[in-house]
Image (cartoon, rainbow, N blue to C red):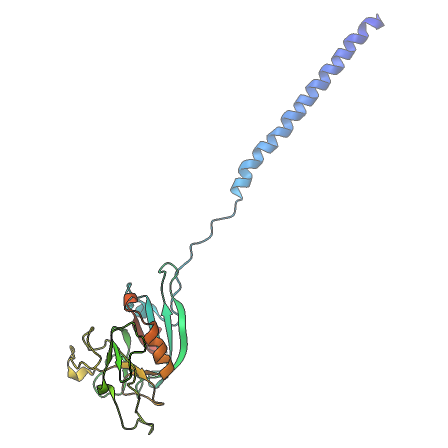
Length: 249
């Protein structure tokens, strides 16, 4: 009787071993399948889109005045509302999605003797605050290669002394007209004043003579030459000008 039971016992042992291995395989496969969704849920979030760079120091009101078409902006920031010293930086916006980047400067500059105003009047000796187009250039000297229309005229000659006794000669060797109270597309010498004579005019960027101006912005001669070579009418250049507090609004 013992000899007959041994094969039966061996079969029972083999059957249990097979069942045990199968059960173990089933149990280990379940956690592997559950790990997939958990890994997906823990994936890193998508990066935030890059925001276009803004021009430093400009508040929302000033930025809103810059036309969408403008791709160049000369930003002239005065030291204070009654100060005649300022700093100029040229910014470019070749790709609107990336925003503005500095291209040239900072350059030392002068503005009106009495500082800045948001309501310029003739002879107030203040520079007008705002955003204005830059469409026309000229000067006493030959065209250095300006991209803007350039009017070479001996009538750009000037003499006399500035507020601090400095000679004014050569101040208009190179000029860029600021489109305040003027008709764009004509020589800077044109005296048409759409807002009326009492609102002043003839506001230019011109060669610095070492002192404050009557309302213009002035830059060193080499910087004026550089500016004339960079300003491009197809980029609709503008000037953004005023004291730091006003531009920050």
